[in-house]
Figure 1 (cartoon, rainbow, N blue to C red):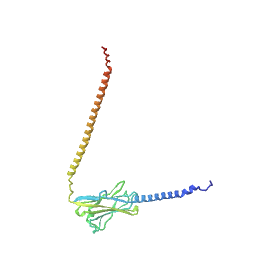
Figure 2: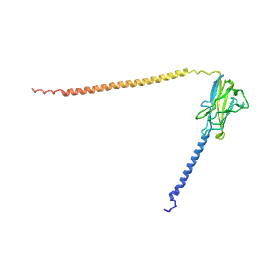
Figure 3: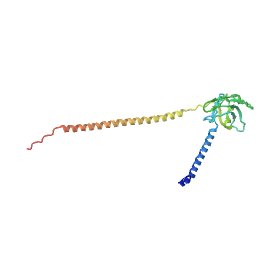
Length: 244
């Protein structure tokens, strides 16, 4: 074979190899882009249940937390209120800034002052996973029912902004749920299941006792048969009678 000349089989397979390498590189690039986009996503959450009920005249918490896998800096956030009727303009309840995770949030003055602003208080608390920007709404009134939206913007993620909404319902008193029927049904089902388990256990015990008695009878029969054969073998043979 000449030096510097590629063999024919290598020339035939090389385009296929190049295609595989290009395809693998392209897939890795797409995966890296997808991972980067997922990592950069700012997440704002109000918990698993965004429906909150509060009793008239009490204090209630409007939850809001945000997190970012690359951290955050120079965050701006705000809380707005809107009634269920979209024709009314949203009211700003709270505005603030947050330098980083080690700093405390600072409030920003709001021009359009409203009555609800005097009854809200920020209760931030940071931890290893996310940051808390929840509000306490004091002395809840029926007019406070509506949608409360938490908006967070992170400068470190190219001013990515996300929001989450809490739906507040104000009631005069909480309804007491009558669980009598549920308790009766649960007790009946539990009793039936317990009875079935008891029947199965008793069946097992009776079957075991019957089988044990049958085994004893078999042992007695075998023992008696062996004893009879032994007795017959030990008896002397009778002498033949003389002929007359």
